Amino acid sequence: MIETLFHAYTPLVIWTGLGLLLFRYIPVDFPKLLSHFLFWIGIPLQILVLARQSDFSGAVGFTPAIAIFVLFLSTSFASLTWVLLRRLSAAHIKKPYFQGKNSLVNLFLLNFNSLKRSSQGSFLLAAMLGNTGFVGLAITPSIISSDNSNWAVLYSVTNNVIGTYCFGVFIASYFGNSEQKNHWWTQIRDVLTVPALWAFLIGFYTRKIPLPETVESGLQIAVWVVIASALLLVGIRLRSIKKWESFELALIPSLLKVVIVPVLIGLGASYFGLSGDPRFVLVLMSGTPTALSVLILAEVYELDRDLLASSIAITSVGLLLMLPLWLAGFS
Image (cartoon, rainbow, N blue to C red; front, top):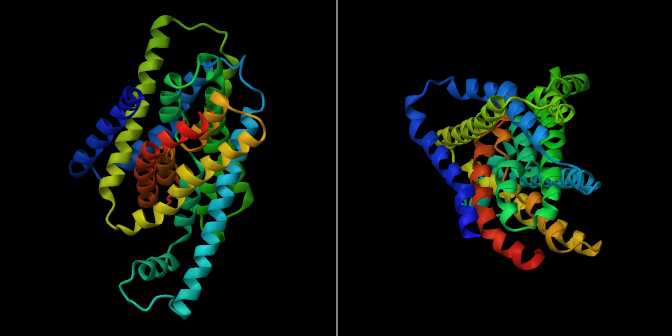
């Protein structure tokens, strides 16, 4: 287990650390250009390769339904939490709950009331989208048997295609646009024109068409370049955070992401008779750290980047703390 986690997190530490170091030496527009490259070229290429090389023949048919349910559950919890905090903040301004002016709760509620629309979109994305591809699929092979690997693969594909590039793009487009210019067809247009969706369809329907070995190896190298570029972007955005308030706010969706939702999924799976590897896969995949792709969506749709970068950092550490508990309780 320790060796598996080491291999899974080594690229994350190296490339994120490189982003932290290079922050002062890169042009101001570089993060945005890198995000647009990943959104339009890098991520679609990665999904095309995943769709071509994945074997869905033994996958359990209702795994996508569970993945979609987890997305709705996470989004619902995050939405209700946001509404509750907004009401508490409004009431706190009229009559403070705590008399100490320097109270952390005081400062948090006052700052929360001033958050913009874009922060709400980032709050929802941080709690909803998990890194099932890079982290989830990297950990599961050494924990579960190969007979159950398709549970993880199908969950990851559903989370990436339906979660990130359907629901995720819809939410990012909605909260990234002003209320005056926001129309429902804008979100529909943005979802239908996401290149990752078309890349998945092309990859899925060309699985049986062989490609030259040089092309296949080139695609594999390109996938790792995409992963490294995404991690580099995370490091750059972490280094650019200027306000610690973003970490305080990120604690809430991070708690939902790696603690509350996975435990509920594990208990629900046990109630319906699932056990062993299938149950553990559902718990792990639903509790993976906030996806790197949320930063790409934040750059493209002008959301709160600091909140998302903070959430990625917190949930990555949270996974290391929660994984032994999940193994003990649900494996």
